[in-house]
Length: 256
Ligand code: ARG
Ligand code: ZN
Ligand code: CA
Image (cartoon, rainbow, N blue to C red):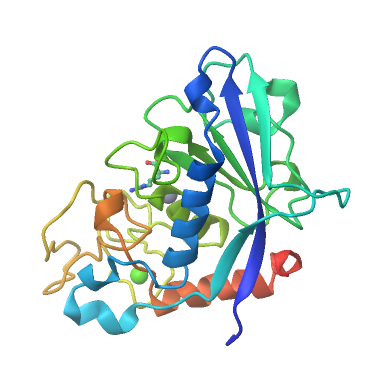
């Protein structure tokens, strides 16, 4: 695909009535959209941190994100839905995605990428639904303090990369280490990312060799690892191929 495609986004800000900081500002929402539009275009200012051996793999996904300007009924909107809730904290159980459980119902997930922003428990920064799942829970959930680059965004997850990572899953990317818990036996189904043992955290030093992947080691600066926001800055050509297959297949109805 040579043309750039745009995905309409609705952000559900689900905030506890007693915690006004969770009702994040529009500027914080916009700061997240800006990060996505850099990261998915390989236009992020930190892309130069990719080690020289992997620079030729850095790939522009030619995907952009735009806050919806029409709601499902065709009425003008700023693309932000605000819902006050009695829930103090949400979890991985999709509760934030329905008004029945104190959350916000999705807009039709064949037309919008739904992002829910809320308080999450257990150290969870966010979670995503892969393509092909139930439409009523389709989308991405992100902890408000790991969302965007301003407002309540807090280091080391104040670079907007949680959304980049989770939208990677939503576009069918697996964790770069293949979720095999150090076994080196399964990978991410992408040929140009080295097989690696497990998740990396923080800001690792290059090279970090595992699974006999020397001399270059783990591609821990990939958005699909678990490093700090300031330490992840690339998608590869193989990852972009998978995302494109998803956008031409099960998620084709989203493109405008
Ligand atoms: N689902 C992962 C978690 O909750 C997201 C990791 C995102 N990493 C990041 N640097 N923002 O841990
Ligand atoms: Zn993940
Ligand atoms: Ca791989």
